[in-house]
Length: 558
Image (tube, rainbow, N blue to C red; front, side, top):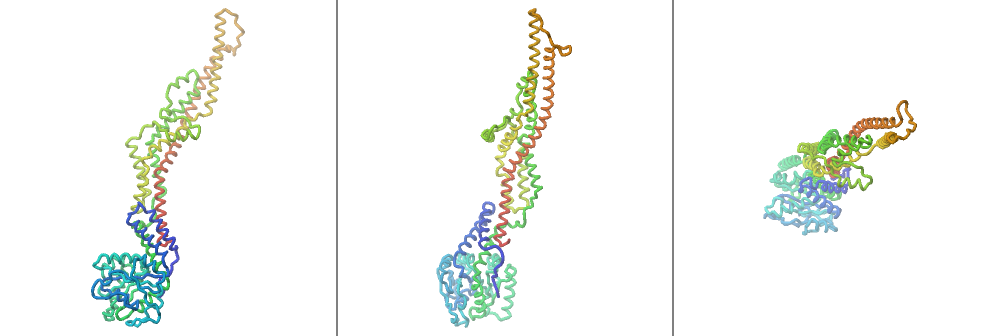
């Protein structure tokens, strides 16, 4: 019979590293008891793999009166353990070693101080059983454990400790107590994943007739199958007569010779720890579809934009553009009246372009606007949008991770108001940039104004000469209109026409600038939402994806 065949898959080292990483990722997200349990398994596995891998530690575990100590003596070929009618007989674990050189640190780690050297000579025979007591068992460390149902708590704790540490578990049962509920529910069923490092021995079969032995074995096999231990070897032995001991020793010989029980035990421990880390409902990938996330993101951006007063800012951008256009391109005689009116953007403390990097950084730090604060309804809409992002992202995740994703979405909500305000101030500052045509029109307006002024001065000179009764110089005309009059009237009309055309252009430009600003503000606020809400959520989702990946690796899946 070939046992413990190596399976293709990730190495033990990679699985151990994956378990450690999974435990780190689960910190603060899963119950501390589960996380600490996984860390304890990882630590224990790390220590065991550094100790002697040439030795296989097998433990005889069983209930009171099952005959563990008798079977221990029979396997060792000598009376190492006391056997008696007083219960419990075994108060502390003891070890029998076949070729135990180098096993000292391993037994120190197991905290088993009582050790015996078993006779490993092939010619040594058990006088009771007539079987070879030590042939080919080199490297076996056999432990005799206290009773797992002992009335003494210290005995039960000792069993629980060593059951977690040994490489190979040999459960010794007897015909009267093989169906004991405590054994199956406390040990066998929870250790279903350790079937490759487990044997079950039905001892004391000499007390039953052969047909009864077969019935007991069949019923025991049924119970083990129900415990999830299908395939675990079940042997019928009698430590008193030696029946079946040779077969048990032969099976132990195969396990010891393969030198694989220690790694199989660690692999089973890692798998069990990974299974405990995985929440019960973690049976698939998150179902938060991209479209649903995009919809939640758009809703969040819209709620933030409304709360930040983006419609008011966009309206101020259009009005401010027209205001500055009139000041820059209006008729010089009337534009000063426009200067008396406040700039709508500057009223919101938005205005001026940062000229260098330092100005831009200062604006990002202290550039608070005077946009009215969000109303209670708007704040509620933002909170609802943030909650919706968390709900959509958490869909399909197991409970603890879903709660962590939701919390991640709210983790930086308190910073949103200032961040959005800075985004509005920085983005809207570009709305005050002056178009180049304003400068050209301004120059043209001053030229027209100068023309009109020249006409005024010319007419004034003519009026003064007439007043002083001086001879009038020749007066050129444009048709029938004197040039001074043409310059005055033409300059005034041209200035007004240019101002009106500039206002029309400013109105159209204000609308375009308002649309561009609205788009830029929505983009900037969307980036704030991604940084402060979606970013933490995506980080948490990435952590869960990595957690699921490491769990699969720890379980030996590729």
